[in-house]
Amino acid sequence: MTTSLETRSLLDELRSFDKGGFFDLGHPLLNRIAESFVKAAGIGAIKGVAREGCYLALEGTKSRSSSTDISAKNNKKNPFPYLRGETNRKSLEAMVKSTGKESLQWGLAASLYSGITYGLQEARGAHDWKNSAVAGALTGMTVALTCEKPCQEHVLQCAITGAALSTAANLLTGVF
Image (cartoon, rainbow, N blue to C red; front, side, top):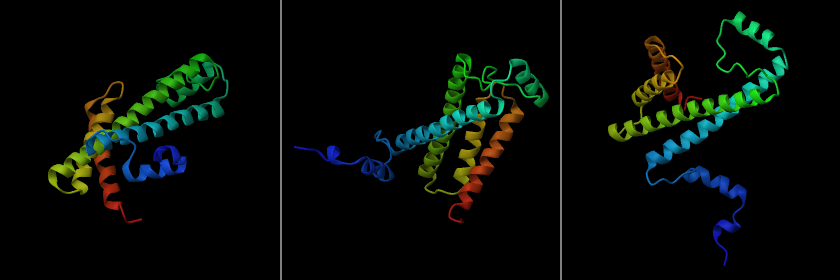
């Protein structure tokens, strides 16, 4: 006796995600949060690996002093000083650390935004730009707080930016 799972192809499995999603945690809010986290964390990981690829392509195996000089000229602090495009162990560890942090930040932002919009939609009975604005502001503040030394001005700027972007995305849905 064979079950339907054994006879389904990989393509059938992938198509089934469009109907129900990746998770069934017993509540639509939990399903939405978990699915948003996994999808966005995957995107964050890809971004982190792509950034390291760019470092490797642009900087190659330059010496540490020339890499430091470039950083000094740009007046930016490098949070991962060993991530220099080299193929040594420290660079690999820095890439993994950077990719993990990037994945966590993207996943946190997406799941928080998704959960807040769902909760507001259920509480207010409407899905509109107001829900998007509140969710974007709270998500922007949370992402700002994940920075190394968040200040009040940075948190406020991120809240305004998050609210503006999510409101614009909501209002432009269906326009294009």
